[in-house]
Image (tube, rainbow over all chains, first blue to last red):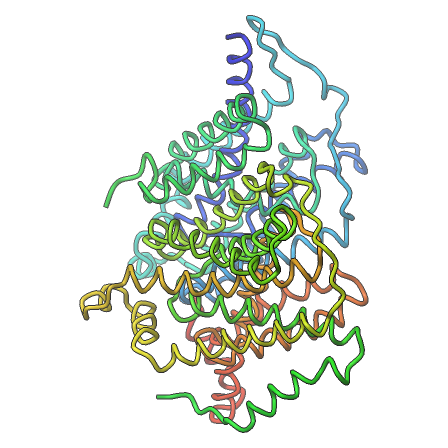
Amino acid sequence: MQLFLQILANGVLLGGLYTLMALGLALVWGVLNIVNLAHGAFIMLGAYACYYLFTLGHIDPFAALPIGAIGLFGIGYATQRCILNLVMRAPIFDTLLITFGLEVVFTYLAQLAFSADFRTINPSYAGANVTVAGITFPLVRIAAFVIALGLTAVMWLLLLRSRLGRAIRATAQNLTAARLYGAEPRHLYAITFGLGAALAGAAGGLYGVVSQINPYIGATLTAKSFAISIIGGLESPLGVIVGGLALGIVESLTALYIGPTFTNVASFGILVLVLIIRPTGLLGRTT
Amino acid sequence: MKPVIHLPLIVVAVVFLGAVPWFGCDVLTQFGINVLLLAVLAQSWNIIGGFTGYPSFGNSVFYGLGSYGVAIAMVQWKWSFGVGLLFGVALAVAFALLLGLPVLRLRGHYFAIATLALGQVMTAIVSNVELAGRNIGLVLPILKNNVLFYELSLIVLAAVTLTVVWLTRSRFGFGLIAIRENEEAAAVMGINTTLYKVLAFTLSGAFTALAGGIHAYWITFLDPESAFDISLNVKMIIMTVFGGSGTVFGPLFGAFLLSGISEMLATEMTSVASLFFGMVIVVAVVLTPRGLVDLTRCIRAQGWRYLSRNIRSHRL
């Protein structure tokens, strides 16, 4: 029982990070109708930003998160403004393909720039733990979990309450009407994509703190983010949270009870099942 | 409109290609095997992705099943290569029939990602199967006969290309194109869309498995990571889209041209070749979304305006 609770706790903490990873993908998908296959590459770039700010700039990794996120926002904004806006009216497959091309470009640029070696972000407090009722919580994972859920909440509020959020939602619902009311879709789309990339950047920094990074982590993380968005549905950040936690818990339990080599079978198996049975997500509305 | 096909030209091209191992050096033959197999993969993907309009990211699963079919048959059961190939194809067909039914109900993004996920699941499953050598992989008996592999690849390429030619002029092929253009309309017109889609998936899978099987025996080693490598699937898609998906010769052009260039770049540095592939996709999707075949056809009439017209028709 103790072991089960420990694994459950690990899964929940991992799930919080997964939520933040998937949030950017879900945002871009929901608003722009682009499944951004370069999302994982943005996460990877965010992780490297954090790594270099920490090792070369001696900035605490958690303080480096906002800097990395702002940098990624810039990259995301430029990507949408200069490239993706050119294919917004093309068939869905074209946007899928072009973001895949971007993912390849970012991955191999990263490989040329940062080398293929594994890197870890290791602050002095990396090994610190808190023990509650016999269950150990690593401090950095708790911090990552709290920041991830905090950012998710902030994002939700931004979309619901702010003028920018309303404009983004309006553009997503009806492009023509939003244009008539003075929304500038090219700019708004780029802002949205930039926000997605910034979330990925923050998630990447946290990922770098709790795990190892190399230029190729992107593809798997994109697939996981997609799985989470699918499991939770694109309707609200709540769905993404549910999806993220579900994936985290399932992966941890699978690793313990079936075997660590089966985690991908479990997570992607669930993805395929959910897709087949309920393509709008577990919390999504049925059409 | 039936595509114009210059028969004598094609015969000359095939004879020329078939003669390459006799006058070319070893390096050229080996490069040739690679290119021909990639062309087979691109042309197979063309059946499901180009004609039927279902962007499969799961064709690398067929490739892996073909490879493992040959490897398991030859290493574990001591069967001959030919029987191994058939076994691999049988595995791929079984997979396409079993999983095609549920997965082909999904469309667009959902289909693409579901097939992408299937690839990941298969890699993980195969790395846990004793018979397939777990994650260490299998080592096949060595056969140093590049000419045989070359001609075999050429035959498979000819077969899959003929199949695609047949698609452009048969009831079945028209049915697939109708599904691509408008699936509901196709169903209303009396096409059994489920059957057609599953058959197209199976056909695509069978040829992909053949390529995988030949490659496995040629390379004599395989492990789950390389057999189910998703980047191979990406190459098929890029080559097809770059050349012109849904056409007979587009995937061939794409495969020959892009492998040629990437081979030259790879002699400098492997990562540069991959970077080049990524850039090609981005540029091709923006400038020539319908591929080289369409480009060569339209650029004569419209000149460079063709490119700006493509951008204008799709930008926000």
